[in-house]
Structure formats: C-alpha cells, structure tokens
Length: 471
Image: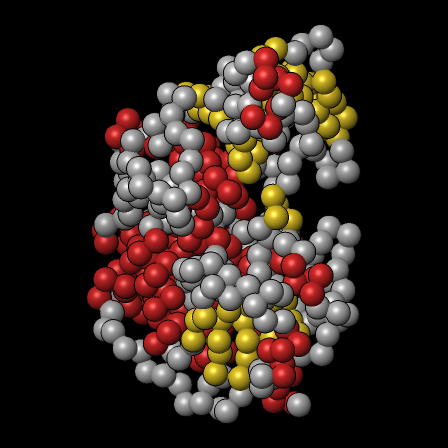
C-alpha cells in the first residue's frame, strides 16, 4: 500500500553553521528506513509520466517498488540498465524539473523524492559491490571518445558493454570532466566520481589523460590510427564575461577558473602552485547552479561576506531551489534586481594609470526592475535611472555562462558549428557533418545538466554501434 504522506522525507544534512566552514558533503543521505518509506510514496501509475521526464528513461516505478520492499540491489540493477552514473545523478540532477517535476504526487503535495532514493540505492550498492566487473568479450572494433565528462563517460560505458575497445582522451590530468573540476566536493564527493570511473576501467575502457585533441592529436589522426568512430564530449569550458570596465583587474575570475582551481588544483592550499585569492568580501555575478557553487566555495575558503548579484528576482533565479536554500542557510546574501556596470580597483595613482596592476576594491551596481517578457517568456530586467551605488568587495566571480571551446572546431575541417559555437548534430543520434564523428553534451548544447549530457552520450553510443555494424 502506498505511503500517502503529502511531503517527502527530509534529507538529513550537516548543520549550516558547521558545513559553511568545511568541504564535507552537505546532504548526509537517507537511511534504509527512510529510503523504503519514501519509495513507498510512489503510486505505481499505469502511465508513469516520471519516466518521460528522465533523459535516460530509467524505469522509475520499478526501481521505487524494489526499493520500497528493501530490494536495493534489484533497484540498483534497474537504474544501471539506463544510467552509467546513478550515484552522481542522485546528487546533482535537477529532478524537480525532470522526473519529479512530472510526478502526480506533486499536484496536491510534494513529488516522490526520486533523486534521494536513487542516491541511497547507488550508495548502498557501491558500499557492498565486489571489485572486478566481468569484462565483455571484444567485438574487435575501436572507438575514441573525446572528454571524460558525463556524456563521454556514458558513451564509453555503453559501447564497452557491447564489446567495443574504447579509449577516452581527456585534456586534464584527472578524468571526470565537469564532475571533477566544476562541482564542489560538498555537493559531489570526488571519491564517488573516481569509483564510477573505475567501474568503466573494469569494463576495459582506457583513459588517456593530458591529451588535448586539436593540439596533441587531431580527429583525423585518430581515424588514421584505426578508430572507426569518434564521439566528441568536450564540454563547454569557454567562460563568458560581461565586457564591462575592470574585468581585467586582479581578483576577477570566471566561475569556471575559480572552481577548477579549487576543485582540481587545490588552490586553497598554502603550497599551491596556482593560488587563489581567499577571504575578504566576494561577489558572484549570476544566478545558476554554478554561481551557487562558486559562492558557497568562497564561503568555505574563509570569505567574511559573500554576495550573489543577479539582475532578476528570486522567482526567475535558474539555480535549483535546494541549492538556493542551502546558500541562504549558510549566510550568503542575495542582491536581487542588481546588475554590475563596472568593477573598481587600484591601490595608488600609478595603478590607476595602469589598471592591469590594480586589485579589485569594489563593484558599481545599478538597481533593476522587471519589464515586459523577453523571447523566452521571462520578464526583461530594466535599469532604474540614477540608482547606481558601489558595493565594497575584494573578489568578483563571473558566472554568466560558458560556451563550447573552439579548439576542436578550429582544428577539424568540415565540422559544422552553429552561431553559438556548438557542434551541429542530428538530435536523435548525435551524428555530426563528418563521417563517423558524433557529438553530445555541452559541446553541442552549451552548458546544460549532467543528465541531459548523459542522455546525449547514450543516444550517440547506440548510433555509433549501428553505424559500425552496418559499415
């Protein structure tokens, strides 16, 4: 019988005053009892619309039914049929706009905590699994995957299970892509990512790090080396800026650089070769999940005050509600309906004459109000005349989006690109304009979600398999 409680079981979490000063995971996870109780809230609909909301089409009612009975291994097997990264997705997927956003329980109450149960099931399995997964029998075909983020890992995993010899080429010295360099430890422990990657290695996937495709080797050379197909999952690592005065001052970072330095290069350590400015007053410009990550990271690095500067209201803020609530609980201040017009900074007159020598000392903001809706239906922010003021800050982090890196485009003849820098593909298969070359994830769409990138990697793997078999 279904559990008809109107609200989800609360997720146990660290106390905000404690977690604001450490990088330990904020959410502590369900107990077996909580997971079973939450899974029992599923009504087992005959037409489960939650599945339609999942980009990788997990059989959600089945895994919830298994979890409700305490069959956590069975639930894991159901999830793993469609998802290569369940422990990751249970933590960082925006379930509220995908599977949970479709859940009928959300009509008169809160939807089933699908993501929370998925996380528990994955953690339960990973804590008990035997090492050394059985390697599939080789089918004699080779595929190259560029990038070890969510789309690349998914594509590689699905192909390896079919017997393909897969090599992932990763530009950084550690595999994982945005899961490693972009998402902080307190949201996604890196040990979990490493565990998922080790599972791919057990399937026979090879990972070559410190290889920059487009510099170290080209796509054409990969094909000449005997790879029969290539999947491009190189992500969207090119940061955007506002092009306002002062963005070249010391203490101004893109969120991409800021998080990469902290998460991947450990810039907060005293002996770091890539140090980062710590403490003081920090302003993060933007309202997405990456902005929340950067702001909460700054707090943990010792900032005395952290602001989120966003030009629209809280209702338009694109970040996940859970991340916004966590940020507010931790003491981050939201300056809504504000927009930067200039970053200020110099120490003396010499620095004023040569701004490249200056450090950030403040940010000029102008207050906004919401006008008519724009082409996306969101009310357009409009400046309020004579409302400028100066905010005292030492560090500014720009988190207003990223674009695909142009390196592969610039070094691969015939690869068609759209005006935003994304690779043009067939939406159903990920096929590009080049024979045997497929692409997916942020390299195609621009910055999006982990699960959407995984869905693209999964679709491309199926298309690559069909392409090579038919060839």
